[in-house]
Image (cartoon, rainbow, N blue to C red):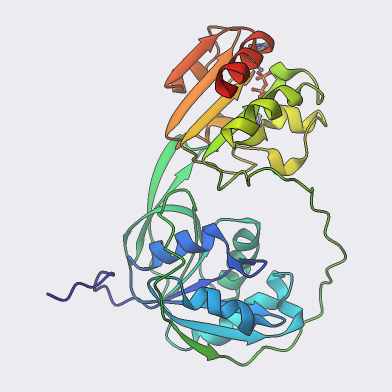
Length: 321
Ligand SMILES: Cc1cc2nc3c(=O)[nH]c(=O)nc-3n(C[C@H](O)[C@H](O)[C@H](O)COP(=O)(O)OP(=O)(O)OC[C@H]3O[C@@H](n4cnc5c(N)ncnc54)[C@H](O)[C@@H]3O)c2cc1C
């Protein structure tokens, strides 16, 4: 029996790919999986030497075709350059334009949708059919099902809600498409990327998060010491980021990153709804807080009411044994 990996809904999906050093971003792999629910999936990669990174995309299981646009002006993923490119390839009959919910996807998709006079659907967590999508509202407290009548549907896909398509086993055709002219209305000036040797927050299997209970930046060493043997990434609440204790990219929550690791351990975090919105899909949630009434205990699978300055070093020495 011939089994198709997509439903016969007649969609034709284009996933706008995000690449990191030649590797396909995890959120793009999730967008491929979401795309396969509505039809065959092509991906689009653009940039300087894009043909090189196209090979990685061609290996992604389920991708039928990789469109490649060469041009230095696409290099930094600027929406002003990507939107006209997307508009030029949509004409080939694509019905769905997806990208991962990342800074890149959130930047590019609404602009491309506006150019097409369509309503972008953001941070999709479930694909019901080719026109019906599920997304959260009000910091994850309301599940909203939206149906769109736009002829071409533009959406960003939440990376933690879909399995990542395997990066091996695909054999997509690679097709060059004509680059659009550089718009030149915006210019990339510089990157300021925090150097870290720790696992990436959004792909780590274990995540340890520090909140205001840690009191200052130096005390994050306690979490780093525990993170090392657990091979965990370290995140933070907005309160801690706003206090200047941690860089922005460590923030988890409604206005930060969404994570869904196997283990989330919150230390000195109260569990405000805006924080929970970014981590509630974690498989196991453990919380250390010295206030038994902290709302986080209602969300946690395991909770320890104790001073974190006592509990965390104890835990570290137990894990190291
Ligand atoms: C529009 C909007 C968007 C927001 N987006 C986000 C977001 O993306 N991410 C986010 O995190 N927040 C976000 N917030 C902020 C959010 O509402 C909370 O203010 C924030 O999450 C609180 O952070 P916290 O848990 O570190 O601090 P607190 O709420 O102050 O909690 C600290 C906790 O530490 C405990 N504690 C203190 N000392 C110890 C100790 N020695 N041992 C153990 N426990 C201790 C306390 O009992 C307390 O429960 C947003 C707010 C708004 C309005």
